[in-house]
Image (tube, rainbow, N blue to C red):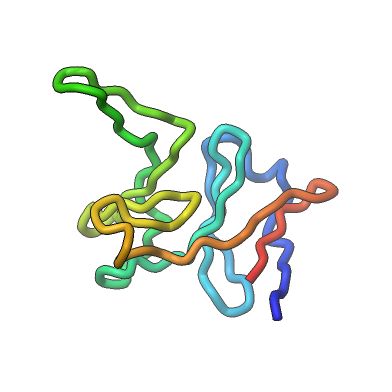
Length: 118
């Protein structure tokens, strides 16, 4: 059975910010990227680092050699220990999406509150 937790006021998480909270005994990173909210378990599956303290960046895309661009609409996070990268939306790893992932949580804003569902 799922439980929802109010983890913050939306005004306290402006665009480009993050917050690490305890919800239901779990450390969860909550992010606001370009007005969209994301929530991930704050533990890298590689060696247990606090994943949500890592750098957030847009997906690097390329159609051909020499044509490289960042897609800020597809945010990723990089583990601060070893640089393993995960999609903020799905939790899938960039390098092995079928086998390695971090737990994402549904997050929404209602009445000015940011709610995470566990």
